[in-house]
Length: 197
Image 1 (tube, rainbow, N blue to C red):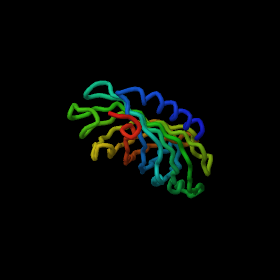
Image 2: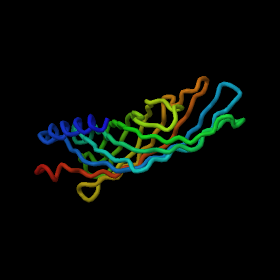
Image 3: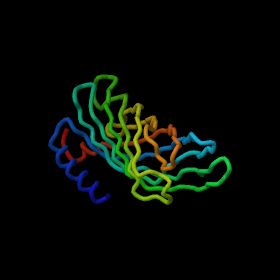
Image 4: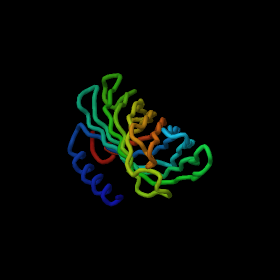
């Protein structure tokens, strides 16, 4: 998986180097979310929160006009989820997993000056679990995103993004879930290093 991602990133880097409307860089961040699971049967499966270690990866940002653009964050992380247990304690376990995540956004620059100042983000998140300590979790899950970011010091930006899960993440029957959380990302624009603007 990491080799495939590296090849994709390398090709996108070459392509974007020749596009004046494309910026690219590195992403470092963290995410946290709350998990609520509703059971149709009389047993309730309960869990707490999920917390990631450092998220690391890259981003690509394509400018459509002075206000709008398309942005993608790609990164890996390690996440630990709180204890899963049901109301009569027949199930109790902690889960840890590694994942590759793709966050795609429609970006709107508030000041109508692209990559300068404050911008809004809305889009989708797709998570692929590459390694997990327990088979309770499904490999793929998705969510919707909404947040904002601010550019500062020429090459840096800080993003705060809300995440609401729209797919079931567990394999147990007759149980649905609700995941609400968010991301904090720090991005660094590498384009100015490799090209003259």
